[in-house]
Image 1 (cartoon, rainbow, N blue to C red):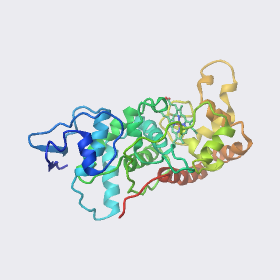
Image 2: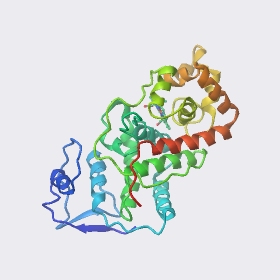
Image 3: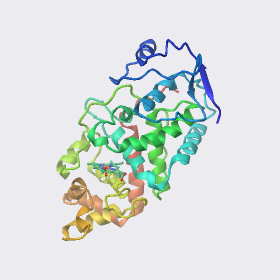
Image 4: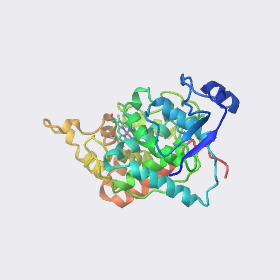
Length: 311
Ligand code: HEM
């Protein structure tokens, strides 16, 4: 991996404020520290990632990408391959659930009414929100890939997260999902309170998802992502249709043992709704159908509210 440096006037880059003003970008109300300079040159990306990955580093990497030389790629296939390669180096089955959750927490803020939120990388500004607890770890993992990709061609957080989620599904045995690249990152956080709470009942969940442009079938298909992770829907690292089989079995109804730990209240409530049960049953019976529908709704999710660079 080659090292890339950009000669810049250090005083210009002394603070995020002057940097943003000069570039005409708005930055979030986060107090950024002056970036570290190496002599008179700023190392914007290198083979060795910055020694400490913190929230400021995430935002630093997002902003310094603007300084990168931007060689045009021979093809979108090359760009895809580069991203897949670097994500592959940091991805493991154990990390897959966290990375897939990251996708929903970035894209799931989309509001189809006022067109705010969506897949725009704004999650890097939203890590303090209670619903995003635990996601910083997944972002730090991806940050290592971002540094490497940025050294060749800048990538947006939105593209990186969208692609990482697809790779996470695939590595765990789920469908291969094609992800189009070219999303632009937001420079401010999305409005608050847009992600569904785990205490919601199915009727409200359906309304919440409808406001994001998703049908009941799509809500049920997307929720199958909970087959990964620690909520007790089969193996935490295998992407299959266990989620639906277990929703139909309702093990939490049995008293005793660990069975009452299985599933979130929102998951369980899908299993109480007639319209949802129709789709839960179909996906429990037919894993191929679940994979096909999940693939399609994942593509829709990662394109929600996305702004695209001009080719
Ligand atoms: C339908 C509304 C949803 C609600 C209320 C919800 C809520 C939650 C909650 C509370 C957790 C547990 C977090 C923790 O253990 O700290 C979780 C885990 C997870 N969520 Fe969701 N989620 C929803 C939809 C989705 C969607 C659409 C996706 C992805 C497409 C997704 C992906 C995940 C994954 C993969 C995990 C496991 C994370 C891990 O174990 O590390 N969720 N979700």
